[in-house]
Image 1 (cartoon, rainbow, N blue to C red):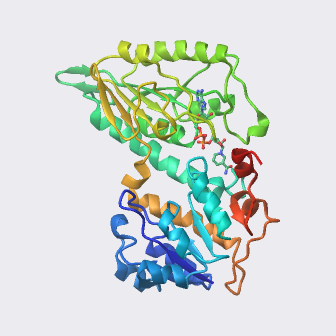
Image 2 (cartoon, rainbow, N blue to C red; image 1 turned 90 degrees about the vertical axis):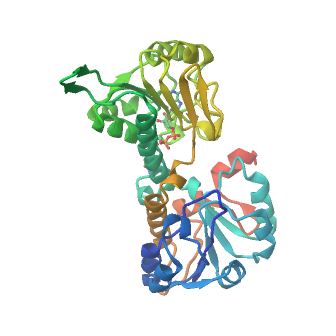
Image 3 (cartoon, protein in one colour; image 1 turned 90 degrees about the horizontal axis):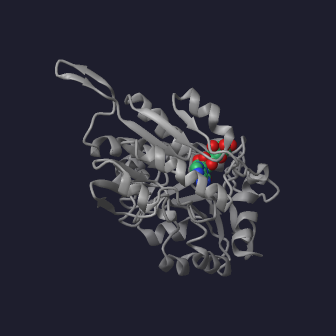
Length: 375
Ligand code: NAD
C-alpha cells in the first residue's frame, strides 16, 4: 500500500501525519510519500519525515504515486482532475459545505473517507478526530478568554486586598465544553454550565462545574449521544435563564452544536447589551452560525466593551499537538483497514468503515451523507 500526505492550503497549519506517525505507518508495511514542506507550519521538517522513512516529493508525484491520500481538509477542487479512478481520499469533509465537491469526487470514481463521519461508538473512540479537535478548541478557548479578560481568573488574597474569582459560563458540555470546564476550573474560575442533555450533569459536577438545568429539554436516544433541536417554548425559557446567568458572568464559552443543523442561538442581542463591559464571549460555534446572535466567524467584535470572538480554527493555531492527535486517530483507523501484508481494503461490512465512507464505487455509502443529501 502507498499513502501520500498532502500539504494544506496556507490557512491551515496542521498536517495529517507528523513524522512520528509516519514511522508508525511504516511499521504497518506502508510506503509513504510526503509533499514538500507539508509539515512546515506544524514545525515538522522534510528531513524529519525522511528520517521516519518517507519519500519527500512534489504534489504531482505524491498524487500519482499514492493509492490513498491523507490531508486535514479536502484536497482542492483543482486536484480532483489529477486523481485517478479508485484512488482513496481521506480527510475531514465538512459534508454540508462540501456537497458539490463530494459529488465531483463521486463521479470521478474516487473513494472518500470522511474523518468527521466516524461513528461516535466505543470501538471508534481512538479514531475520533472530532473529539481530539474539540479538546484542543476547549483548551485554547479558555486560554484566549483568560488572556483577553481584564481581570484575573482565580481568587487572590493579596496585600492590596482580595481579588474575587471570575465567573465563566459554558454553553454546551460536549467534548469542547467539558475540556473548557476543566481548564477554567484549573485556572481558578467559578464555572456554570448549560446543556440540553441531562447525561452530562454528573460529568459537569465531577469537573467542579455547576450544572444549570432548564426543565423540559427534548432528548432522543437514537441521536447517538448528540443533542436534538428543541421546541420554541423550551428555547425561550432557556434564553431567559441564560440571560440571567450571562449578565452575572465575566466570560462565556459557547460550544453548543446540533449535527447537520445551524448552531442554536442562545445569547441574544439584548443579553450582550446587558453584559458587563470587559466581558469576553468565545463562540466556538461560529462556523455553524454561532451561539451568539452577533457573532461573525473569524472576527473579534467589540459591542459596548463586550468582546465577541468568533473562532472555530483553534486546532490550526495549536498545530503540533492538534496534528499529533489527528495523525494518531488516522493510524488507529488505518489499523482496522490494513492487513498483515500491508494491503488496504474498504470493508463496507465493518460499521466504522461503512459510517466513514462518504462515496465508494460511484455510490454514496454513509447513512449520514444520504440523510444530508436526502437520498
Ligand atoms: P457537539 O459538538 O455536537 O455539541 C456540543 C454540545 O452542545 C453537546 O453536549 C450538546 O448537547 C450541546 N447542545 C446542543 N444544543 C444545545 C442547546 N440548545 N443548549 C445547550 N447545549 C446544547 O457534541 P460533541 O462534543 O461532539 O459530543 C456530544 C456527545 O457525544 C459527547 O458528550 C458524548 O456523549 C458523545 N461522544 C461519544 C464519542 C464516542 O463514543 N466515540 C465520542 C465523542 C462524543
